[in-house]
Image (cartoon, rainbow, N blue to C red):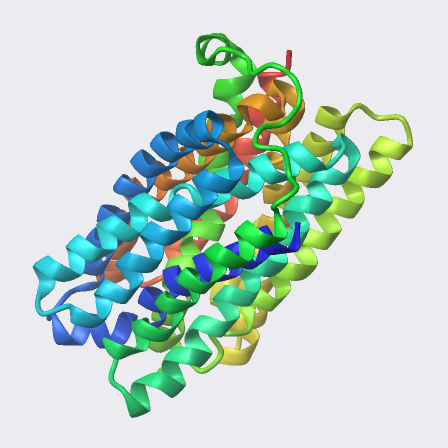
Amino acid sequence: MAIFVLSSTLNYLDRQLFAALEPVIRREFALSYEGFGYLITAYALIYAVGATVLGLTLDRIGLRAGSALTVGLWSLATVGMSWVGGLGSLVGFRMLLGFAQGGGIPATGKAFGTFLPPEERAFGTASNQIGISLGMILAPLWINWATQYFGWRQAFLGPGLLGFLWIPLMWWVTRGAPAQPAGPAAPVGDLLRRRAYWGVLLANGLGMMAYALWSSWTTAYLVKVWGAGDWAWLPPVFAVGGGVIGGTLAFRWMRGGLAPAAARRRAALVGALVLGVATAAVPAMPGAGWAAVAIGMSFLGSLILSVNVYALPLDLFGAGRAGFAVASLTAAYALMQAVSSPLVGRVVDRYGFDPVCWVTAVLPLAGVMVLYSTRE
């Protein structure tokens, strides 16, 4: 499983380079916060398409070949960012990156569904979050160093090349693994007719709003409100703890006799409450460091919620259709981010970040209520 966790580190390292460069990119291309939000939207829309296409591809051609295809494409896009000349090429490479990275989370979800029993799947997504968080931590640290010596474009080159090294390593490590999980794959049409399928999608779109906000806007928040983004590396550290806590809660409740889906809903509720309080508190923090801690607690709650919501499709729909089911969650998240990012930018341009934090604090709890209302 470690090899797929490593792929998530590379996924989010490549993805978060752009967020870490937000002040530089906005200045070079003369963008408002709303304009930067539209760049996020372009990425998110094609990410939703890529998640669906590559999720189905993973179910069809298998985990190993599908993962190699996904990582190879996004590594190519990341390397291509080192040759960006204008806004058009920037958007083009970002959209290729978004399409390819849409397959990253479905691939790891399919791996967990294939190799882990139900009570351990939230731990699988929790370990995956450790990989994601490591990528998010490394991105601003790498950018702070690399831009001093090479410039912001060339900073994409090294991380992009790492993906091409991952592919043969994965192929070797998984050489004895089955091409597909045991058991039949449910027809896609059956999933589309189930209330639980649509409930999980809507819950994920609402529940991950705080995660989407801080994944893209942490550096922007710290720079706008406190004048520097030096603390941007800290919040993802809390996400590691959130993943572990979310996995532990579900594991213990299942061992205590609660059904897997019920245990995950209960853990998601805990996460929504934690992130709601933390997100609402961000504007009240007295300094940049404390703001980063509050954002970190918002991340922590988001991950308690996320690791369980992303494990739910494996319980409800089986490992054979895990690629499509997890891809659907990924697409729902991306569509929410596509719609919300320009709105966030517009509000920030006019009123600052405070109203964004207050609204974001409430939405994940609404998402959990959807989970409970669409039980089967």
